[in-house]
Image (cartoon, rainbow, N blue to C red; front, side):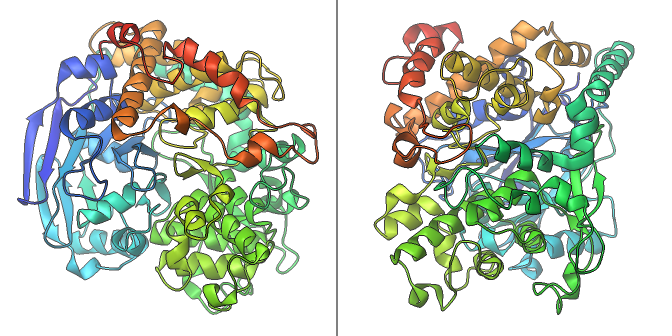
Length: 615
């Protein structure tokens, strides 16, 4: 129950779609979505494979709670070897696509090989076929989604697609569903493009069954009440979205600014969640139109925004006058503070373009910030940039370069490499602010010590969503820890990483963990799924998944030396704020983390650890 028990295997080379049974023993050990799909990927590919070769596989996966009435139960993930990083990639998305996939009767879709022409997959319950997508070649995600719905005459079809960026090999292309929800990081859209797969369109009408309907309904109701009563999930996120963090993190002295040269942005308020509510001086209207929610979500943190019609970015472009997905905190930071830009409408426009064409705004903004530093150092100049002056703070540089990157034009081709490859090309690798080839999100590891360790050890490259210690270090959830201290952070990071792996694999949103512990999740899974599911079992499952992902990366060629941070965070002390004078204490935290993980001094799981988790 809760699992459909079916996998759809799509051989793009042969052009075939075949149903096969789900391995239920693996489901018992890895639950679903992130964990279960990673187990399948590891069993079917060589971790050393070229991410863009036909031998790499891409898996779209749901969790057992996806498609149920469990709050936030609309998630799905895309699992593959990432093109941006060369590491294990698992990009999680919300919206309504995951629910549709589950309601069509599929736990996972495994894509293998490469089509000899551009195609899209159409699924209507148990019927699946590959359809020529030539008419959508080069089309944006928005046009592709609207076109497929119109072609099949069904507004309820859910579509996940890539834009021209994914087709053209931008290293951090996304997969966009429901117009502005993204499987966003690590280049999963680039892998999809390498397979000549333009989109997946699904209509599902079968429903999702659970083991004990009455007990499940009780557990779900209790979980929803916990979310409603919590100040973050019940008030903060619905009102301000993730943008509630902009002023909070800035005041904490951990907002990376101008490519991490600074850790506070003097204009943070101008691009904050509060500013999105305030009337604009130009037309008296706020940036924010409303909030919105993904399938089954009672938090509703999604933003819907508009841009001032007279703003230079859109005054002659009517397609951007309508409301669309507004800024989340990470995008507002990367497009704003990271680049020193305080123009809220310019940030909103840039975010629209990222959604429309399918690129990760975190990596784009961080890469542009690195390019701006290269420009101000004189390493690159107007000849490189086509005459665009890449100065920190230039909103026009931001909006020009995001469009060039989305369309693989001009200097945007260089920005499409990501900051690691860009900075290496120009002889300044130290200016890339990331781990394992993936750029940092919106928190500085000098001002928040635990998140620095979480970045360094993240299996998919720098990531806040693999162990969100911000909850504890800044928000005091579930307990308050001092963000400037290193003591105890190894255990904190490990606990967050293991619990997050369980949340991700269940098919629910990680934002629910602001209020829920695994004690809230376990009763829902236990009532939905066969077997006995406790919080302890879920925590052990999360640790098993973490070690398995580590195995993949080690086999792919990563070592403990890759669990590191840029020299800027290790050697250049914070200039202002509570962390003034501080650098990251990674060297103190990392050995303890390895020990707690049951890994050797160089970061390899010991035989005892592997045996413990059946790996």
